[in-house]
Amino acid sequence: MNKFFSSLVIIATVFGLSFAAIEKPVQANVNGRKIIVFNQALNEKEKDELIARAGGTKLKNLDLIGAKAVWLPNRAATEKLKANSNVIRIDDDVLVETLDIKEEIRGVKKMGIKPQPPETLPWGIDRVDAELVWPTIRGAGIKVGVIDTGIDLSHPDLVLNIKGGYNAINPLNSPNDNNGHGTHVAGIMGAVDNTIGVIGVGPQINLYAIKVLGASGSGYLSDVIEGLDWAIVNGMNVVNMSLGTSDDILSFREAVQRVNAAGIVQVAAAGNSGGSVIYPAAYPEVIAVSATNNTNTIASWSSRGPEVDLAAPGVSIYSTYKGQTYKTLSGTSMASPHVAGTAGLVLNTPVGSYDLDADDIWDPIEVQNKLQDKVVDLGSPGFDSLYGWGLVNAFNAVQP
Image (cartoon, rainbow, N blue to C red):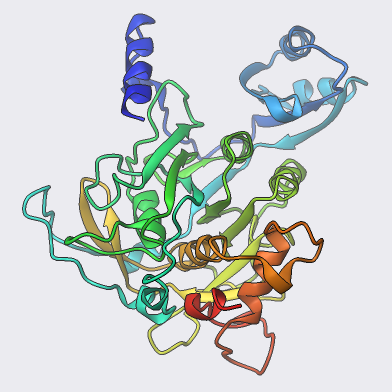
């Protein structure tokens, strides 16, 4: 992995590119950003020519679907492309954001590499009973894509489990985390069992940093879609999306459906508005996770509704952070990786009686069914709109 990232630096140097300049800050006004889905009979040159004739600027290719993210200067340009028979549709390239509660962040004094704090068992990991699984199952060999702000690639509590990654914002950059959110999420799923810091739900899970959000914690849907497509091509077993948008965009829905068809388990944060579940968590192919506190009560700000599938700890969660440090954060962003990590543990077990299609391979719906069957029920008996089927439990989930 280090050789790979070093090569990216060399390439950028050769072409005179500045890493600091490449990753532009996300702008609040994204009305001109669009995702254009073309007739697949067109080649790339023909697509680019259509965009140029309308006065648009290509931002990136979305290769798996033959679409492109573009900037269109005005409504006239959009309407001109819509009228072309070779354009199937034009979607808004909306903003997508992390789902931590900014006002509840509790910082920990920067430790640096030496000395590091002694290892502790975070309350959330303990609450889902992950430590009871570790004598026999630790998530070894399971590839989990952290679709987020990246991961601190040199964090001593993560580095042994980081196996690769991709920067969808700009492929010439490494997927290093310049925000902190993705590193926090990664630690909940897969912090190493050593003598420092914390330990994750699956301490031998293989982590992949799929950077789709920038330093502000925001990004564009086209980058998220590219990150999902990268997960397919590179054989992820699980992806975690502690991010979301209130906009239901067809290109997003189709990207999620592609990931599901590839056999990848998708887990996402339900949202922090206290209202409806946002996207992608609201899509049926995704396991939507609400957040609970240390009394097993849903957080007041946790989104809720019939789309919620499971609940997990999401209040005052201590985990890894950028700059080789640790922080305590809250949000459904923190709940989701407890479930994604548990899904990784389940994938280390035989599918057994959950094998709906008798192929002896875990499919996403089979993993979800087992997680839901093995919960600790909270709230109203059975399913409810606050906790879904209940609180995820790793120990129960790996039992036959």
